Image (cartoon, rainbow, N blue to C red; front, side, top):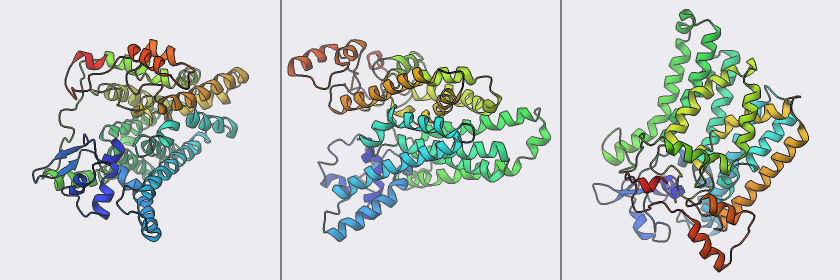
Length: 423
């Protein structure tokens, strides 16, 4: 799975001393039965296509696991139980840290009780829950943390105008790109905040010139975060910049994928995270509240571009996961309109709580449906969704019927433009 491709930096450096060729891969058929994230290099070994940002976050937990395994006399291969446990604990820690920083931003605008409800809804009512507990080691809840930190500092800059805060926001935008290169789009959020503040200054160019220090901090912060991946590309390929995804790529001539990615039953964002309907309604209510002018500017700059890029990927459903994992970081932005609903005197709280509770139960139940393979990882349709709705298990006859309702992608055509791949 993808988690292995991100994690592999740690055992390669600290256990096998073999980042150059990853030769230990050949001695571990159980851990590396699927090598889709590894590419042959010029010397007959392998390199991973992923960036080292996630491994850097996992490093403290890896070191604790490695020392613990030695002390307890357990296997120190980097893939035994202590290491798997460490990755899982790290996943929970970083998700909780991300929710904590997001709560600190929300508390600048809302009362504590609405913020508490919002944070609980994000954790238990979205696929953050599944990604954290059942697919630990993937990047998306970790990027959610980075996203929350970026929001914390850019919102702080908006109210204080301290250059260091703008630089830190850019630093975390760069770190998001270090984990997943496409997350560089998150840098559009500081752009949105900056342009809104410039608008308050009546687009005064004297103000713009006065922000030189903040811009320098921002550029340095962003570029510093890219240095590790540039060094790895130079080390592994001999080039400072490399495209490590081979035939995989984006197809910008297929805008209908955006519709599928939002409302299709294969992996529709609104289908498997229906809490977003509440967020959309909350955004409608807060659209004229001047407290959130900068946030609206950030949304306008970031969200359309992010959706377009994420859902133009050749496999826009992003493989085996519950819901669309690539859009998990963007859920941090949904927190503001949801909190607005709970904080607003205009909304009826009992219906809101009932709907929210239903979405939480549905999310947790469907997460376990996915985990029990009742829900298919990437071939769901409207008919199969209705067929399994509310079912905890399927007997053999039901499984056979379920198979007739699925619509499988063409798994054998990675990265190639085939119409059937995008149904």
